[in-house]
Length: 127
Image 1 (spheres, rainbow, N blue to C red):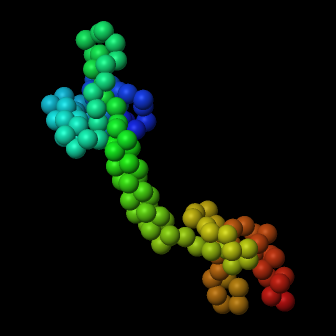
Image 2: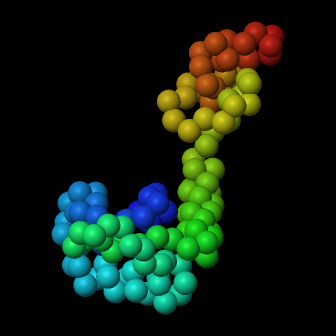
């Protein structure tokens, strides 16, 4: 994901970002082995960034972008399924509700609403 979010990135930058995000230090060997695996699959290529010691950078190839997009789509589908199972529907306006919705028992049936106004409108429509 770091490779996708930047035009190019150094191994050192990846290490520092992982340390910041995870609160743990990653092994440089692990990072560079992983990058080499991505390179062997054609997902990443080396690029020259500057004349400094950390001049070697990495960039996603077109195939790398497609691969990451496919992974993101899979995660998106998993998240959507997880969220769908927790959604409620406003009994009045039909909007999908995830959290902070209003519930009211009407005629012995517990109904979910996006707000008290929809609950009131629903009750007024029933009578």
